[in-house]
Image 1 (tube, rainbow, N blue to C red):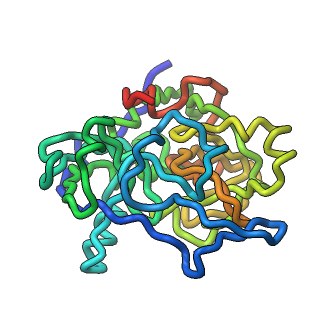
Image 2 (tube, helix red, strand yellow; image 1 turned 90 degrees about the vertical axis):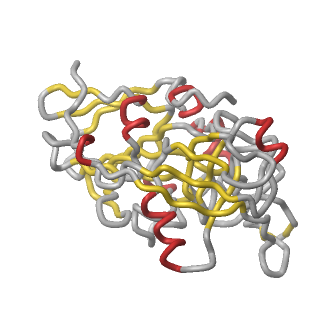
Image 3 (spheres, rainbow, N blue to C red; image 1 turned 60 degrees about the vertical axis):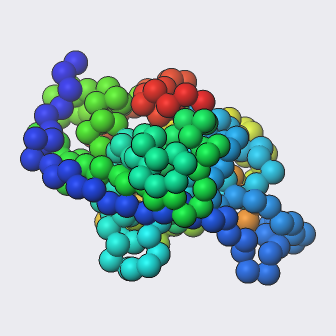
Length: 287
């Protein structure tokens, strides 16, 4: 089957930059479990040495664990939002200061910060405050023959790597698993170009029954009846394709984070389940 036509030749490539952040601990320090007891766990921001795309999303002694390095520009609201809105999954990044200067990596997620994965050797010599420049491309990417399908945070590199095909008016994509829309939680209030939506993972028996506890960071995910055109809402028959970008959480209403990549209000996206549908393989990131 052929690949769908895009407006890729019309896209604008721009540089944005941010610095590696430092880890953050929640106010009050304790993170509450659904049953009321609480703990202190590592998770968001900074440099994560031993968690990469392709690794498990569940089972870490952490909260919202992020693969790679977390970057932002908090000195100016405009630069902060440009970093978020212009970045797309699969964009190339380069370290421009510090001991790892010149190393190149790939944007692998957007959480409260932008997540970029480099080689393990580069991570070892990076430090908070090092500056990362991202060559952004993908905002405005569209399928010229499928106006009802919206692409979000999708770089041309990721689009081609996913091997999306078309047959008549329908598109086909491989995903690692399907999530029921009823378990989608925090992040429904955010627009689908900015930050992710967590699935609700507090029901551990249900996670195991559905096989969701086998999810990996970087997995492509399908959700039926989820319309992510303008924010995230329930719509009968709609289909959205997403990406797992951070790990599980013990907090009620939270769990692994799912970033929107494609959405079809009329459900014209078909999908098959494939264990290889992970950006660690698709973008040759290693695990």
